Length: 510
Image (cartoon, rainbow, N blue to C red; front, side):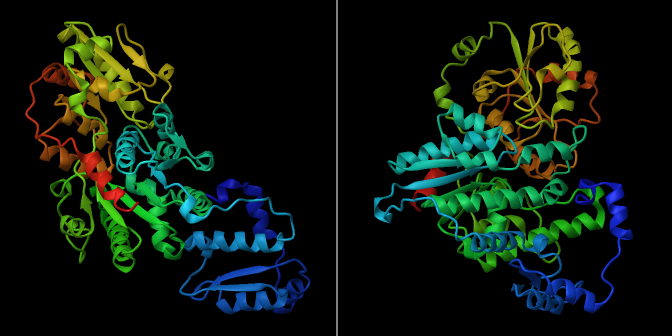
């Protein structure tokens, strides 16, 4: 459907009406006249076009045949990385007579230690924790050089921290834009959105493969770098260096209204992941879960599949939670409030929805609740953080409301607020738990991670007040704001050494 929408209706009609080659003799005659170099790629289990057809095409053109053993129809979709690499090598063989630019090769022992760090762009929380881990790894490995393969909005955080973003990052296809395109009004079917992200993941893996081939890295660290992890397991011969995989959730989970089809699909994805790890345990030199064993959801990956927590305990190291900052270094609350521009007697409410544009609807609903909440709490001051991908000018205005596009070191503001209103992403919620701040969280509809994985962890920490977006009008939100502002909380403590624990596991590989 996507390919069809890239052309016109008239062109599609012509493809049906145009005369075709009707006999084997005509086909052989056309192929026999081909004089340019030819590469034929064909799966030997193609159930649509027999493999013998590809064999004949290669023979008639004098071309090269590459058979994909066990491959089916449409090799470019089923085995895209291998097809891309075959095409690249084929083109290079045709153009090999051209002059090759001069290059320098450095002997292995003369090279500095180098790591390539890939930080997921879906949510800014990854960036903050990854910077903290990178700093802790450098403390354990002096003179370590780290390049970042990342995209907006993560690159904004990295640049502000003085980190080095690899130039090839500019070639990455935008995952955040895809997620935003898949979203509705406070609704993101996360599993289905990722299923429909194949083209982006393939393209970005090919960028990664070029970078790691040319970069002579000692280590690759991927924080929820789904493209790297999946396609390395599909093409294990491409692994060139030590590899660390990090995540804060494990297991695709179906939404109730997805029915039997979604239960089947999520179980199938989980089964493939389990088979990958069992078949190629050497690919992940470290698998690190950002959290603790009890933070993993219960239940099974699917019918006849293992229990999720039991499997994660057997296949992951646990770093504890990584906040990305040390609460002890934030200092006195009142002094920090004063430094950030908050006045004595104000009741500060921070509203933030992360680094994507998915949360715009929630911001609008909370803005509508602001005057109602201020009637109940006259000293209320509300700061709405639109984030890097929502235009503040697109949001409604209210007297006394402070709307900001982007707030550097937002965690400092969250650490001293009287209340926060957030979307339901793990990183922001856990910052608030760490700093013992009351908060309202609105998980996105159909977002399995926020509704199951994050909710499970917050329930374990006895943290936050869960709100239903669809069932919350401005009056309901205003009442919740008034009830929760400045409430004394009794959350389970969050460890503060998560970055150090993760760094120790990573530094062992350097």
